[in-house]
Image (cartoon, rainbow, N blue to C red; front, side):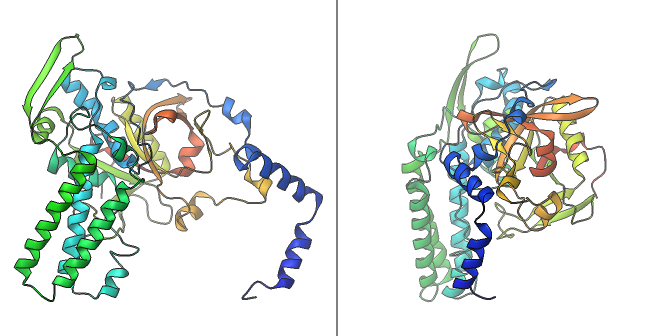
Length: 416
């Protein structure tokens, strides 16, 4: 059978029409998939109780944007910075707007350089940077965050706060950024046949200046020097004057971000070996190939617990979607019985091999409940204020936690 025929449809209909299927159809379409398949008993089995728990961090809200990678990374480091400022972690908010401004500028620069340097046709560009390998995306990786921090520094959120455009970047902002950058890149491509390479880079610099202006008008211009006022733990008023973003970073961030290593558990590759996740543009320092160390899930959990015990949260990447309840804020693979709809979901190894299980969202672990020496549930700090904290059952860690970032000081084995 190559195409669907009328005869095929008649057979499908005849097979489907039975009382049980029609009853499921009626209930599922009335209640919705989530409520129809929900097992409420599982919600009661996941209380928000933890015997290892970190302080609450600042509540970030990415709203209608794709910046969980940045907000979760700020949650990872703000405890260290808050300690060095002598304030509680809950008091400190760092600016995601500042870092994501430069993330967009760097991706724009990469696109311009690619068009200038690659000896390819317009059709080839449509198949790469003007197509499926488009670098102009708001999502990024933890290594992007690290590179941005070490190049541009950090500023408090009050210095470069969020605004309506950044909080709802899918409305207009991203489209305008992409439109400007893509049109500039096309113009640079056309100029390649008409001007010298030196002149081409001069035009590119002009275009980057125009992009800086556009991003500044929408996001606000990043500060070169700033003052920061706050109250310390003793209630004393403090003022940091004439700080640069890199100076603020150098004085108050004492974690070495390069020591965070991504760990994954991929049963299709040999454990305790380095592996590569191939991403587009591996020659771009802000979107490199992602190297990770492949370990069993038991190692990921053990090291995550060690890091939590030291007082440092654990950044994770997960697949969300099928087993979460937003109202009760629970992740558990038993929450929904999808077999009622006649579907059996992929196991972990099959999901990894077919990319059904892959990173969709970044958050941080800030607590864990350990019973009889084993984790049973985890406290997750999210990047959406209405659903700030989730309880994640350990079965969800087993199946849908794709990656954890572990500080190498807590490794109990040697990296090969």
